[in-house]
Length: 465
Length: 103
Image 1 (spheres, rainbow over the protein chains, first blue to last red):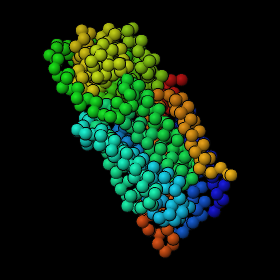
Image 2 (cartoon, each protein chain N blue to C red):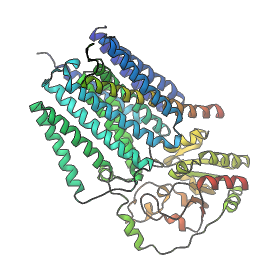
Image 3 (tube, each protein chain N blue to C red):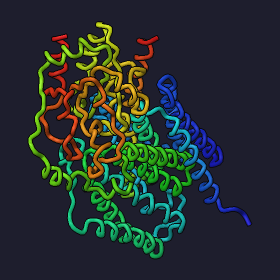
Image 4 (tube, chains in turn purple, brown):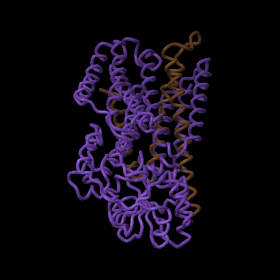
């Protein structure tokens, strides 16, 4: 058993180590060391908790058993998960943090003595407020992440689910959560506590169903932020510095990522949260949709164009992840490089289903990270490049965003792919992207459509080079 | 009159938000996915509360409603901790290989 002051110091140390873990991510070189700091911080926090309780009776063995059980499941998932499934994995992990926060809040509510929070039915007011906020945010994180997970996994349609009176309903539920927390604190009634949890689960579910697949990067970042605030709420309840620091870090990290993603789509945060994007525009785009001619080609044509190019820019998108085409793509690029063709990659901030999704896939395929560029870094180079190879991206290349104020994606920063001498567009069909709008790029004079599975097409091109 | 300890915790919280703000802006965009998985792992430090809850039973009744929720939360948080750190490690190792190839 160690003193409370000493354990508080150790919790502070582990909080600092978590800050260093995030700091490490400022460059790939320091990132692995950062991760080790994070692991060390976690080991310190867990060890100190055991020492400060100092109760190594039978319960201790069960705690260890559950840690080992959870740990082996986690380790198994971490080693087996394909990199293309990272968005689902992260959404799934968020839901677990949320649920863990709810469970901790429940056990603190049922047995406040164990946490030094007063007695049952007479919990300290401050602790009860913190606990109920932590529990409510945790519950929202849980059910919201489950919906995000189902949508990303394809178990639930990625298209927005909207119904009449949705926003008023959500507003009423959110207000009722605040009222419930107030009543709960006034009455200490356990029934109100359970109602609060149920309503919070419900609102998490309702908040995410109207948000479409292409907005998932924002949703995942937002849920990341929520999981942090939930942890912070519980941290205040437990008077634990490590949890408070971590909660604040994760909360602000998720908020910043959401901001970056919203900026990448030129949409306000509220516009995304209110949802329904892509559900209504499909009808309007059908109106002026006459059959326009497109040029389509095969792998042979594509290989010919690329062989005669001196520089090629690759624009990967979610379709590349779906087709698992990143390795085939790297092989194609290797062949191009052997022919002295300059190749670089252009990544749009919202390409894929989560922040940095494309970078991880390219890294997996051994693409050096200094060949991969962000939108602002590379956008001027399209005018000087010979071939743009668009693989699995769609909306982020749509010139309509620059030309048509009527378009729902107007004003969104897009890659200036159409400025290339020629554009190769790998796609399975002419169907519109997630935003539900037709891509003008398909019909441009210098665009050659390659209708095929991204992986197969890339392999065929390599054969023809 | 003494300052309520809550104020100290609130100060830590607010200052940590600012630290988080500056630290996260300095994260390179290509590492945003590892950032999410590592924040996931560290927010599972909530396991601290789960352990306290799990150990709250007395020797006669290790399993009461409160401690059962504690055990479950321990397992959930452990999935996240191991899963989060290991998958981050796995991703970052890929970025590492690049460096060797290049230099």
